[in-house]
Amino acid sequence: MKRQKILINLIILLVAIFFAYQVFSYIKIEDDKEKSSEIYRQLDRNSLKKDNKDLIVDFSYLKNINPQVIAWIYSGDGRISYPIVKPKDDNFTYLKTAFNGTKNIFGSIFMDYRNDSFDDDFIMIYGHMTKNETMFGSLNTFKNKPSYKDFDFYREDSKLRTEAVMAGIISGDNYINPKDYKNFDKRKEFFDFIRKNAVFDTGYELKESDEIVNLVTCSYERKNSRLVVVTVKNNM
Image 1 (cartoon, rainbow, N blue to C red):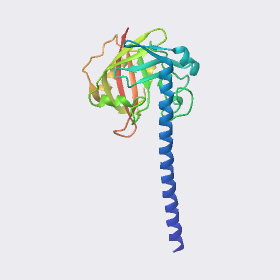
Image 2: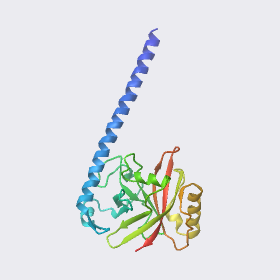
Image 3: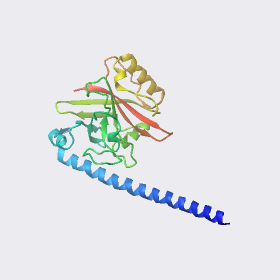
Image 4: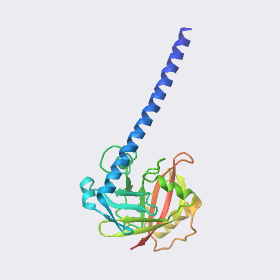
């Protein structure tokens, strides 16, 4: 009887710890969500000006906050509008670090550290999938029928436009190193792999002169999945 009582008390304690952890996690997520939104609202207010359909980005302001900034991404529907950073040594730091350097589970939009720049033939850019459609949350629309396909990348000295031609859901276990895709045959192999797993496909056929910018985020249809939106450069 005493053992049974101890076991019941232990179960009650474990359940209480579990629910306390769930409550703490929820509070932490909500707090980080608000802080993240405010960080990027301020960046938007203080570093962006609109000139007709174009943006003027104050990179001096952004670099004072984070010298690793390399561009500003702006989607055709305006829901993705963020600075892009490029870490030096890993792809983990900015998963939980906001643009201003504070710890935040919503993180930042960042280029793969193994890429050199936007001049590469094959680029990986990462951002979190979120329920409130901040960061790369709105890329979810590519699982159905997106209302836009274009993305603008504003750099200090130029503007790059890309167009989404395909999106696929793949396993996060796939090892993708941008440096392995300098050869067209390798890029075509990747392109065909995404096509086999496509949830959005314009039917575009990759050309040897094409340069690819991949937008990558999590996807939750199955465990450890990634949504990859394949866009092709249109240099301006």
